Image (cartoon, rainbow, N blue to C red; front, side, top):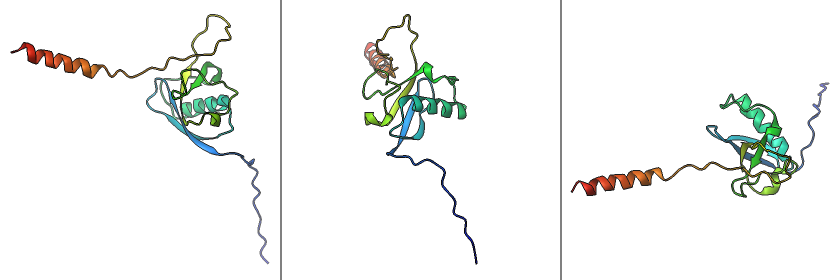
Length: 138
């Protein structure tokens, strides 16, 4: 008679949906993508993003202290997400990881982060310059 051993799954059951999120680190080449439970806290997502960033050997080196960073959602606004909020409560999957601005005092104001934008004005300057050269040469 053949005896079969049943493997016990010791992994805890995860309730809720899982989401594939993208976290773009300001100053880095591209986003970090990983799967999280929609019930996870923003603080946990920041910690996971920093660990993934370091594991991949990305530059610039950020460090591992999750208290020095905030998670923002450019779609919602520039205000930083609160660390105790659930990541699935925002209805979006693209986030930005930014360093916290240095505060002068202990104000209780919400942290607002300036999100850098790419400049799209350079092609206009080139176009105007090229037209100006053509017109002035006649």
